[in-house]
Amino acid sequence: MNPMTDPLLTELDTEAQTTRRVLERIPEGKLSWKPHPKSYSLGQLGLHTASIPGALAGLLTPDSITPPAFTQPEATSQAEMFNALDGSVATARTMISGLTPERANFIWTMSVGGKDVIAAPRIALVRALMFNHWYHHRGQLLVYLRMLDVPLPSVYGPTADENPFM
Image (cartoon, rainbow, N blue to C red; front, side):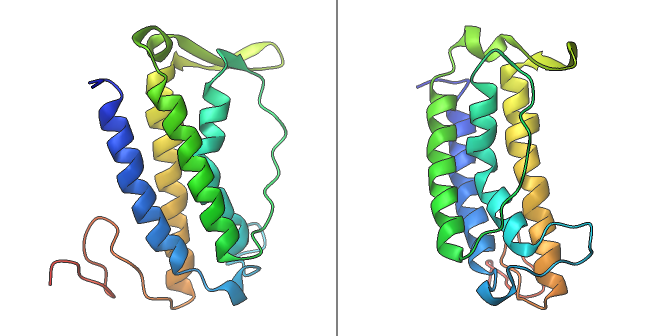
C-alpha cells in the first residue's frame, strides 16, 4: 500500500470507466464533425481524450523535457479510441505506481528556448496536467455530444438524459 499513489490509481481507474462511457456515445458516422472550423473534430477530440493519461505519463517520466511537436490524428472508429484508452491508462498506471517519494517530489521542468516554462513537483503535475487536462477534454466531448443531440451519460451525477440514482 502506498498512501501517496494509491488514491491516484483509484481515481485513474474510476475516471477511465467514466471516460469509456463518454467515448461509447460518440457516433462513428460523425468523427469528422467539428462545432467550429478552429475546433478539433469529434474523432480528434475523442482520440486525444483517450490518450491523455498515457501521453502525459510519458512526458512526466523524464526529469525535464522540451515539448515535442504536437499533432492530433483523427480516430477512424470507436475501437481505435477504446484501444488508445486502454493502453493510455496502462501506461499511466505504470508511471504512477513507480513514483517513489523522491521521484514524486522531484521538480520536473519543461523548457522552451532554454527557458523553464513549467517547474513543479512531478506529483503536482500528475494532478494538473494528467488528470485535470483529461477531465477538461472529456467535458469538451460532452459539449460536442450535446450539440449533436446524443444522450449524455452520467459522469458525476445525473444528466438530462441519464440518472444513475433512479
